Figure 1 (cartoon, rainbow, N blue to C red):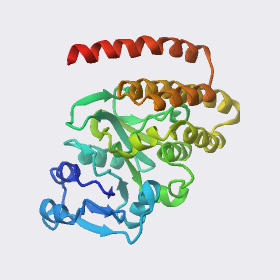
Figure 2 (cartoon, rainbow, N blue to C red):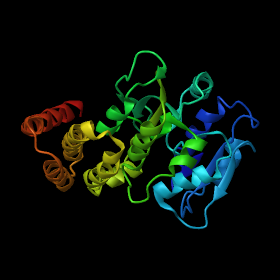
Figure 3 (cartoon, rainbow, N blue to C red):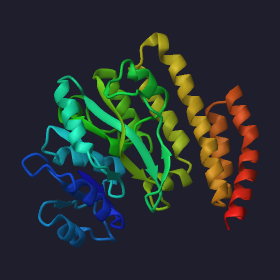
Figure 4 (cartoon, rainbow, N blue to C red):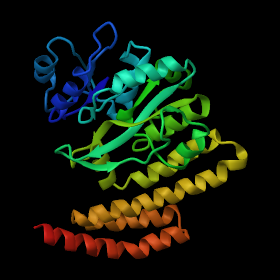
Length: 307
């Protein structure tokens, strides 16, 4: 399921990455779900690239990012659901690898792989940490996922019955609605991990992630997310896990401040620092804050040298 809204720029590459490993219409539904776009009509592109293999559904009104995810689940007909944003890609072997994984274990609720962050030109700028060296179910994953958002949306496939049993994505969250969903799944079902990076999400100035970051919603939304996550944890480890999560949110805010400063978004940078300090003040946070000017100075030197 490929949700899109006013963004056909990368949609061709997204669909090509799926169609190149298409097992056939009897095995997989491929559908673009347009969230009432006002520009970048995807229909001509879907018709040209899909060649009749890719269907298109237009919503009569905009549901927003999280509402669109839930709408994709409602329209999905398969036993397993993969939500792939219209600017992300899957690499060869993604569907075949997960098909084998879910057949190996009937109780798996979701399966995900190591992820890549790429830029507009598909250059890798980040590779996520390994959860384990070999494919398999992750033991006690609830504690790791609740302490830090470690799953990227295009990398995960979820059993349809899991969505039906647990409910959809929370509409009162935005930036971290997916994090809360992964924690909810991990609290109730085993999760399978594939260590090979088989999917990537694209970071660019027009992405929803970038817009949320600029609006300084990320830290506040993360705090709201943690309030929903806390009840999923055993009582004896809830406080320590949430404390780690708050620290990670605070440190992430400093990282966003660094990148905002490099893009000369100075107001955004200062607001990210302030939000991070409100989230969690720890020794690690203080050290990171003291190092921030050094990182910024080093970044400026690198920028001038590159030019």
